[in-house]
Length: 147
Image (cartoon, rainbow, N blue to C red; front, side):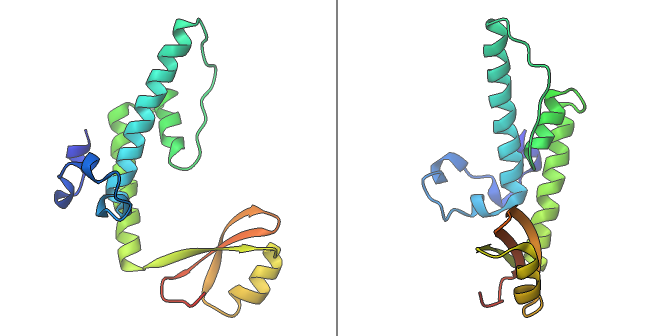
């Protein structure tokens, strides 16, 4: 399935690069997202089979971020192929955006969302990307912004 959606320059054997964290495979969302979706689908299928052998039937599925697409697949909202097509599109768009606007995420510990907004976001071009906890805030900014 991945051959259909992977970029032309990523048709080599991925598994030989698994030990190499600097492999270009793992920094390209156009490749990684469909791979993660496919592996998640396999894991979900194996889990479902194991539960069914024990007469356990899951009554709901859930996922976060990329996992939401696998949850939609397992819930029967989309087929596996439709899910893969959606995720492949998502990965390509994310990759294109990161090439056009290189950015980074920075975790700020010990400051509230309001403090981060007032003291950091007003001084450097950045936005709050995620509030992980009351005093753990993640900002997104240009890759060239000093942090």
